[in-house]
Length: 241
Image 1 (cartoon, rainbow, N blue to C red):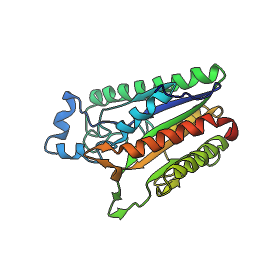
Image 2: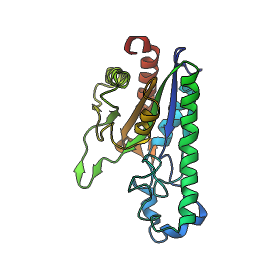
Image 3: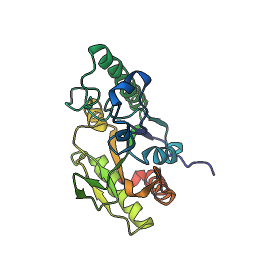
Image 4: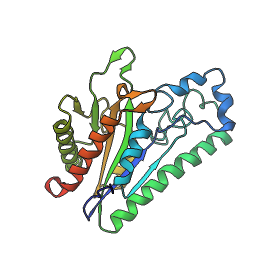
């Protein structure tokens, strides 16, 4: 069945910054003796790549990264103290420059896509696909899905409200929270894009509890509910824009 696309005048763009745990050959010595960490939530967003691929046919443009976030953190600003992890922080300048080149290429290419679409007269909804660990620092996170946005941006607020309602209508048992488990205004890729595009851009971070990922794969029922609810919200965009 062909994917239903958003209405004219609105472009959906998707990204997935933490899709995998690949480490380039040159960086593998940094993780020697600590390879197990790459398979945990510290090394990647477990199940996020599955979900991204499920949603990608709906988008006008989509991109994902499968290099581990422990190499360089694509969802942080360039001057964030945790841009490099404890495993790559001590790399020599040349090694860090190679990682920065990868970082700038990924983010720059996506920003160019946003710029071109806004210049063409369309509005952009960017959904960054993530997942979160059910337990962090000993604290249980009971929510199932988080929609992160900037409350000061009406389009983002309206989109997340409509999407949350559409998800609950399909699966009432799901706990959908706004700006949890993180604040939508915290340092992240959409945050930087909001600064670059103060108008005609809406940046949303989708966070899904990793308890729905079995053996590293996201549950089909959750992916289906998110896909169908996203289609509904996009098709009803005139109502919330």
